Length: 441
Image 1 (tube, rainbow, N blue to C red):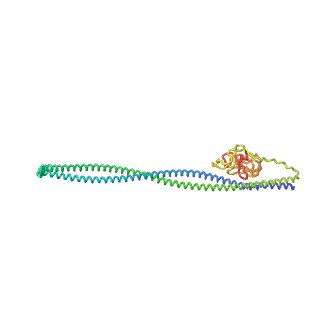
Image 2: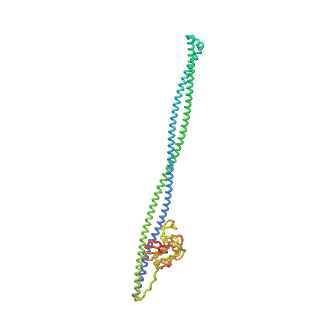
Image 3: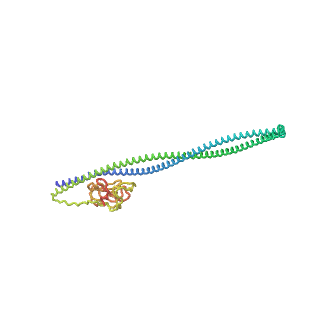
């Protein structure tokens, strides 16, 4: 009777330990799952921030290209304006030189006119003198003048000399008048040349002034273009500052999200370590209880009962499904979110409802639903090693159940974040994921 009570007590203690362990691990796993959901949300937020940063960077690059083009155009306009200013300066100097030349020509014309006036005045006087002599000769009669000259003469020779003198005087007057006429003609020709030069210079001056006006108008047009481009450049630089500010803000937010993800992942690592600790404690407790149960049975049977040999469990790992691997362990482009993320396991292709086998013998420590994993199972294999099976359509085992290698534990599905039926398979060592291909060939 005492032996039966002992066996009953050991059995009761053994079964009572499972709910306590389940409550502890499930509470922690719930926290881990909640944290994983937070990480998924934060990862999506981080991905969105990175996409926005890429867009803003692209916009910033475009603005910088516009600023470069506008600055180059302004620089070219400045060169054109400087060239116009130099041309205007040259035209201004040429106009000034032409004005000076015109002034010199006008001064020469004034001198020439004065000389012409003087010669004309001299001619007028000579003409008046000649006219006076002609009138006097006319009045006195040239015959009487000759007779008077003859009477006055002392000899025929004196008469001849007097007559030749009169003739020379008349001839001289004519020569003087012809000379004056020649000088006046020469001066008139020079005056006409000067006036022609003045007219040509004035025309050149007018052309230069017109050229200068055109250059000034072109310069004004270039300056207006420059002013417009400078306003555009100011706007572009304002946009540059705004985009850089936005980019800094997005980068700061990305760092904040990354830090928050890091904090949650550290918390998860601590929680996973706590789960592994609980598993080890539960296994140790189970081992002691198993030893106590066997001791009680031996005591009941008088110590003569031989315990049958327990079959050795398989120590290797097998593939949970026979389908081909479709996505290996490591970084990849996420099939749902479209960004680059680390794939913590491997994916195997399989149809709906295909049985999923345990990769190795162990104890089911979790069988529930998760937003990303969908229906998933975790089997503890001892020594801190566990395996995870996700996106299942249903379960074939329950929490706390002992499973053997190759035993069906669930069925292929597409629950959680999934694009179609497949198995997501992970190997974890002390809660940290490892490459399953290092364990399962």
